[in-house]
Length: 264
Ligand code: MHQ
Image (cartoon, rainbow, N blue to C red):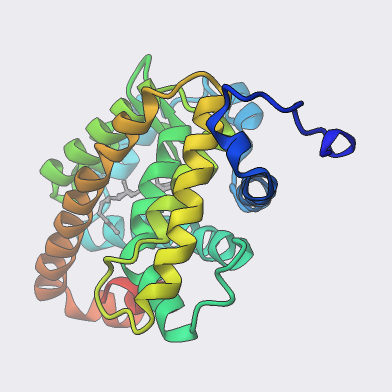
């Protein structure tokens, strides 16, 4: 049974074989999450690979430095908002997400979309020169100088560097992103039980592909990233509060509605 569906033959050494129906279910879940990621990933890896040599010139960096604090914040808020939009689309295509009540969908996205953006950012990171694909080319931390939050930028780049160093495959990024988003511990959830059940399946999906890829040691290294992500997001919120006190009007009139809805 299962051979017509491309399933491996029965192997009594394989723990999953004790649960043949749930293995089928987990394989379908993996495939579905990976498809959702692929359809919403904003940039394909091959595309990024081909653009690796495109680095901002001295003159272009000067141009970012000549921007005022609020201009640079606005630009970054726009780029971040674009990235969040793709994460919202990823969430909507995740199996089981639509079955979560709408208030809880919003709560999961409010606290998790930035974390997924940061996980995805590691795909856009070049560890050879510590640059990230931003605004059409690869940018180092110096490009973000005018934001006046060097500590946050450093922390975000450090995270992207260490995450990128894990050299995750696209399926691994996809399933880890789903795990970050479907978190029953998020504040304000009304039906934690439903989120908990979906989360358990995604945890199985993650163990399953890492077992399949012979990279079980990644399980622990990935779970270690979860508190780091939480810290980065609270730093982002702190910086936004600081910025809003300085430039309330910029946030009110020029920041994308989605950014304000999720982080405001
Ligand atoms: C995207 C590319 C991209 C672009 C911008 C100022 C602000 C709103 C937040 C990147 C605080 C600073 C952002 C620039 C920091 C958290 C912001 C500044 C994926 C996302 C990514 C890399 C953004 C990630 C968050 C950054 C670093 O395709």
